[in-house]
Length: 259
Ligand SMILES: [Zn+2]
Ligand SMILES: [Zn+2]
Image (cartoon, rainbow, N blue to C red; front, top):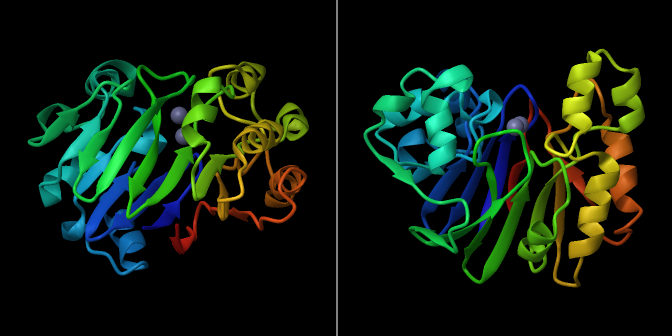
């Protein structure tokens, strides 16, 4: 199994997970042309995707999904709450209500199967309708993705405990958030229990799930206003000095990383 982050941050998220010919795109917050370019950078054509899986209805994760799915006839997997929110109200996305191949799954489902990949949804505390993150299993390996969560929960720790590779949110440094450009209401939302994980919370989460088999840690969803890669890396290195964590960039992505 291997994965490639095509971009991560509040201006758009997409991550590709590949195992034995199955290619799942997790979220698509980019316009169609930009997604095509980001896929081309890792030598994948959109027609080679097996499915698109959506974590929640926020624009940085779902904005590009309807057009991508319609253009290439792709299956879209999402929780019922996520897709309801994407079709109605403030988070409504054009084309979301006419997808030809929509696959709904409960966020508390035990396991989903897409080709060679098994997916375990992890319900997370985030200010969305029915958000979840995932552990991907295939080829005897396990890759955990956890972004967009306001709190570290026992359930997410249990789910992420035996992964070979992890992609974890390290969204903000609380002091930079406090001093930064966000108005107080947005600061409270980002730093709140249904917002985003701080660098210190990412370190707590990593500390709780560390085990000798963990080989890769990639930090993601860093705020460009309220964080810096060196601060995020320093927080996490304090709990895993022997792993060399990386950072998924908003613009460059990560390239392929073996799980
Ligand atoms: Zn997000
Ligand atoms: Zn979100």
